[in-house]
Amino acid sequence: MAFFECQGTRLLLSIPEQPQFDHPSSVIYFQVDHIETAYQALTSKGVPFVSEPHLVAKTDQIETWMAFFTDPDHNTHALMSDIHRQ
Image (cartoon, rainbow, N blue to C red; front, top):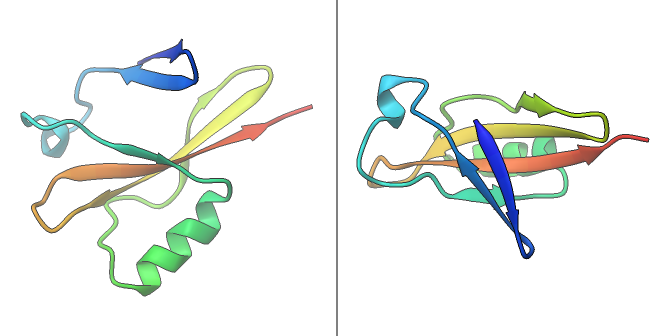
């Protein structure tokens, strides 16, 4: 997994970790301020999540959390939230 900061846009490159992620479309990551709140709101509206919010990367300053879900066409996307540590 590699993150690149591109003038305010963050690009993530990685190989598929599971078979459901190995398909020709790209995962779209939606940046949210509070991942648990967004996860609960979307779950209550029937959005099918593949995973609950979980830690995917940690540096000295930032923890990155994600929760993956599928759209009506069965493409995988994710909520993403960065927690800045002091």
